[in-house]
Amino acid sequence: MNSINRFTLVGSLTLAALNCHAYAAEAPPVQPKVMLIAMFGPESQHWIERLKLTRDIPVPGLSEDYPAVHCNDQQVCLMTTGMGQTNATASTLALALAPQFDLRKTYFVVAGIAGINPKLGTLGTAAWAHYLVEFGTQWEIDPRDAPKSWPTGYLGINTKGPKEKPPLDYKTEVFELNPALQAKAYALSQHVVLSESKESAAWRKHYPQAPANLAPVVTRCDTVAGNTWFSGTRLSERAEEWTRLLTDGKGAYCTTQQEDNSTYEALLRASRLGRVDIQRLAVLRAGSDFDRPYPGYSEVDNLLKYADQGGFVPALENLYRAGEPLVKDIIEHWAQWEQGVPAS
Image (cartoon, rainbow, N blue to C red; front, side):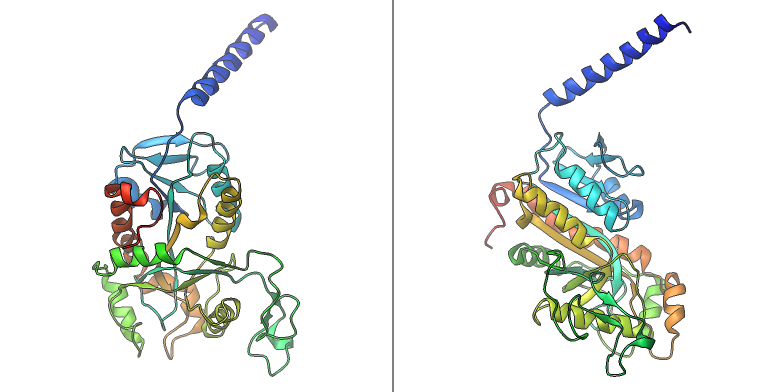
């Protein structure tokens, strides 16, 4: 190809790209009533299939694996961020700043799987969160080198011991979600019948206490985030204590995941710009595996063989079963939801 033809081709492609961009800029932005947020493909699938989210809207800055937002004609959309804190932050902020969307009245629903505390749930339990607690923002010393009086090697940054509440210098250590939205989401979903697998129904019976050995239900309790996937009795007990510390005794740790504080912070920054309303965020997590073993079971095997518990498939199903009533109510009663969470 000679140089003239190369310049002609490049010029044509550039012009086409500019025309496409201009067209996109002229098109009115999509105004979702609900934006679902999943972290990886399996969490997205039930929503995409059952709500017929067939319209794909590419958004620059989303995950390379999940480059488009999926929407339907009822103004429900879904974004998949990619797993972990970095992906959640980058994707959520890219969405919040995308000119293709007007998100000022959108309700955001994070729906993802999680580890579950057997003191507050079981495999398949679906929990609406009030507090989002960051587990990773701590000092850590190898517990073998810690004072014998310490129950753990974790302590708050700039504290003198594990039981002291740290100064919240990072501003991301703990977030409180809108309690009115949590209450409404729970009221709409609390009587939903949740699913179990043959394996999860058998596994939960190893635990001697309720609710771990009971069938899963929808509940309300709080979630802990951190990129390190922890497992075991001592670390899980630290998550309980850490949640109590950071919420001044008001929070109760029941699920563990990676992304939710990161997602919240990205939306909070967008909210300060007037692009979203942070009071319209709900977080739903469903237990796919226990965070600690039943009595007599190996701490190591509880982590390495987590899939044996059989909670993955029912947790994915229960995210949809517990989350769909809220999505449906927002869509069907938009006149009541448009200005904020309905009072009753």
